[in-house]
Length: 474
Image 1 (cartoon, rainbow, N blue to C red):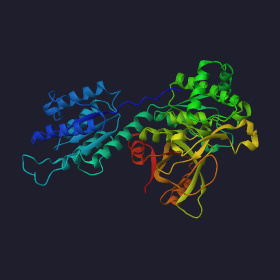
Image 2 (image 1 turned 120 degrees about the horizontal axis):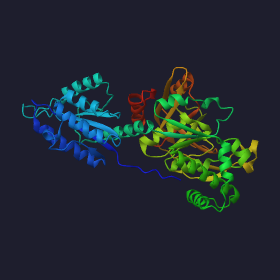
Image 3 (image 1 turned 60 degrees about the vertical axis):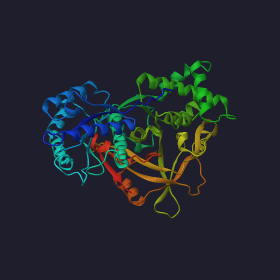
Image 4 (image 1 turned 45 degrees about the horizontal axis):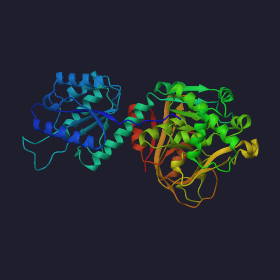
């Protein structure tokens, strides 16, 4: 299976300056912001300290120097941070971003004044300059993100938290604008719910490559049990989950399927897959692909059930924001009489990192229709009690737009005995969310991730991708 290599985020930095405000603030502010970015593990692209006055941007010529530098690194830049140690020159900053022809998120930060340092030598006026800068960015058609407070000390934990959220927003926006997803097989015939528009996704930069299950099965027919790739896949499965006592012939089939999917993903340079996991897979091949899908999601190559490609978009977005695996679940049951609790479930292919304990088993639901012997390969367990983010993406074909809802909640330790991959969730005003889902006609699937990244994902979806989003805020 292809390994996902996580590179260090790269942020372009613009330090604002203005001639009749204290220059020494630009110099000290530059040093402070670079120190914070280094401590946060970010790679920085910024004009040299001697290339412009104090390494800041004030004049048209300095804006051009910055723009040309950003152009050189355009393919590497994940986002841009504008910091105002003093009022700053808003026109020069906007020009630099426009000329660099960047389409990345922009974070606007302004330093705070200190009450004891309000003389002509030390007063920043960044408070006011930020408004002028945002006005110009609006005029230039450049979308931007604001910090949680109007002015902030960049060394504070509050700013660092804003910065981390912004980096996550950058990761979501950049990755989705160049994502390549694989769709394996047709959707289950009875699941109109997973219909979607490839064209709308393509407009946002998300390409879909398709392959029929018959072609997958045909390629498997050419794979031999003795092939080194099959042996390696068997070792991967055995390292991932205990397979002792389970039928070896089924595990070999699973390994052969994994090899074919891996090769196809490698050939097509795919980031994720959505698979027709029932019932053709069981009737004509004799296994379920759940364990393989779990392994892919665990390896940050998310895999969604039932060819739910929009559901896969949500999984991928949450993963990119958190750098941790996501899963796709059903909103499945009420939990007793508590209106703010419910049960989520899938059969299951959840990444093992999300589960308290795991074991491989047969598919409880399909066993009664396709024969238990044909349903080996589910990965079952209860989801850990953690805070989580949920997200569902859909294509609104009638109105020509991509829509989504998202929010945050808690997986609880409330008692529950059932099967598959499951958990009890607690979400504030859960009934309002369920009403919204039903009134807007969203599917029963939802992507989840055991990290709190709703703010970052919403910012990427709305400001930088132009999607219509409902944020169910707590």
